[in-house]
Length: 429
Image (cartoon, rainbow, N blue to C red; front, side, top):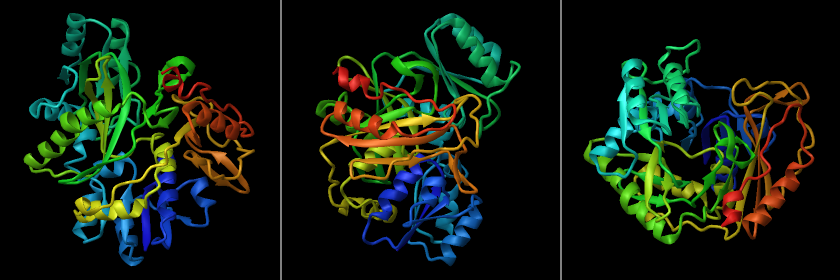
């Protein structure tokens, strides 16, 4: 079977890498791919991003399954367009993807269906938003309503930070956040600040049935000790010790299953990866910070390293609506940990075209997944903010951490940034 993976980041490299390991897969096309997918003989980059052109390609090449990685094509309706042509595709419809593409839709949905989440208000007028912040106080969380490439959340520890975030997101200041899929103009969602430990809980869904993937935890802040600006993610590990069996059961029964039932009841059955970003308090009670309608990045990389089952099988069942017939997923008992190497200037203004050298050869217990890389003549160069995710397996978090940093050690590019403490929360436990 030929498979198409839509996207060009680290998540898509990891998905394509895992799909290519299936004995049923002849070739995996990655559209548009990156410098890492270009170097793998089992993968073939496809320089197409237009949805209709991708559907044309899938028809012509008789693609057996298309897996959509990033949020933008999902929000643009790629699944609807593929299904209209009777093409097998895995992902949520445009309507279902509003769980991610509109924070206001997502919060209203959770409130309506009794899914635990932070208290919130939504605003389109800056004056009203500012007045609300003054009334409630800080710390407080300010979110842009639409897709903002991982930059649309500000955890404001002071009133000044909250007011600045409102001006930035609603366009009242000197700069304006670039937000896609805002329905009816710019809008912010302002939430209560929750305390606890974050975790990522990702499932495969076919509209009725869900299969949970291994738990994971990422590191959003740029610098060690969780300092500096928020990013798309500077590293991740799996499993997440904070998600105990008791917490896992609570998440399934209080968050995941009610979400699937609620979407079905609203006439929007949910298929695809569903990512619940959780805050788990000291008593083990989860609240939903956000939904993503895709795998997380960089969580995908360690999760795929640990998955022993054939990824193609479970995704085919999910795309066909027969997930209840899928075999139980098998996981490597070892811990997987990934360290993101980012470009100079990330997250604000990442520099491109820095030459990358020193990449280690793939090993059974260590793989370098590419994100913001491309080929320039004979060189591998940086082409985005997050450049690589060096991912390794180990008998414990500490061992996986040591192995990842060993694999990372010879890699060089000018201005590279990476954290030296990925996994610190789990090690502390």
